[in-house]
Length: 298
Length: 204
Ligand code: SF4
Ligand code: SF4
Ligand code: SF4
Ligand code: SF4
Image (cartoon, rainbow over all chains, first blue to last red; front, side):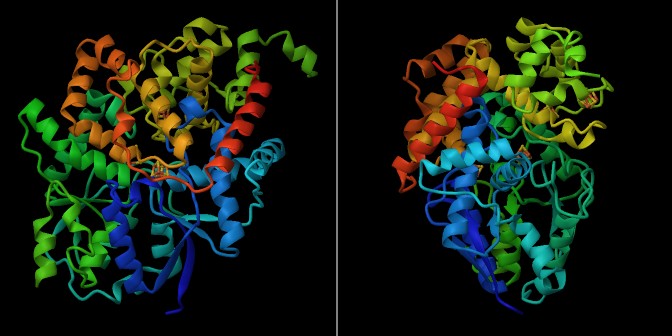
């Protein structure tokens, strides 16, 4: 397999000590096994995420993402940018879309960047890690390194919003994307049918509007149980956090017994590729995925 | 039709939105089909769903729109955008309206999403990096803050009052991640803000 190289935009949530750092751990292990090289963009900044708009307005937000592109163009020329966080990927893509098609905003963005000695040229596309996996490598190549298929484990593939809308993954439908299910099957697991696949978990409002978001999260988890799933798997760090963390709070308030592990696709792959529990970041969960931990010990 | 001719039929608030709100120039394209109104995850919390907001803008209901809590219920789920037959960037217009209302000081006082977003942004531009996850999670686990949230829900004013009084500054818990070129980043943000403020009439 030819070696693939990308300019990596990890995003804030994947930093050391942050809550999705186990996502990064498993992405690193997964890329290692797949011979994919990801080089961190030097001095990248936060993209502003989904609530940056409220205080940040438009141009400061455009400038933030444009700065990441400019740094990638300068330090890692010719390499495509890859993001692991749904919100980061979306923000970068939205900004690129807007300034590539609006000369006034492009000019103004570059005026702002000039204050930091940078320039946006628009030569770097941005991809989600999932796109790299299924488009650049393909399911066959993803299957090859499997040494410990996740046999007998039933997963609910929770795609959520931002990896799915408004751009989504090429060739997938907004209402029923199937790539995550296919990834599960590629590593030997079973993907159950799941009607809350693309339901929003409340996103950043999980914090500011807890009651309303927890209603969403309850539906997402209960539906996974109803369909016989043992674990939920997702490509989005905020989905992962929201859906895992709030289960105990929902239990407290509503007397439910939710206790379902919520994993990243990269963790499933790392385990199936023979990685240790640590390499897969399985130690980073409040609700432990014991059946996956058991597989790593085999 | 010449621009002057259409202008006679365009009320001032619509023009203001077109000029000052992110992606506001799209509002006139809405054909009131109602598809977006059924798309919001927190639907029942929207006093005025997007469709209605667009109608109100065209009807010149400036005060009612800008003081509304509705736009702040947007979870950025993009359901509306992929369904709208006219392909309006509804999500961005909702964000734009919320931002505009906030900049004008018209957004509802103590609106929790707005208060959170402001803290988030201020931290972000200080260091260039934040952690929205640790941000909400750690808050969630801190006894003090869980109480703060409960207060915010049960006695609206109390929880966020505490936050405003800096007794509950959630940013305390964030770690030391930062970009190296902080001076450049700050200069860039300041420049961007300056241009935007000039364009949108916020320049002092
Ligand atoms: S979206 Fe979230 S994780 Fe991504 S850069 Fe922004 S704050 Fe960080
Ligand atoms: S499901 Fe939730 S966390 Fe995931 S992308 Fe949507 S809003 Fe964000
Ligand atoms: S879906 Fe589009 S056209 Fe229909 S009401 Fe909403 S914004 Fe207007
Ligand atoms: S993005 Fe916002 S406005 Fe659109 S459907 Fe979701 S919550 Fe509603």
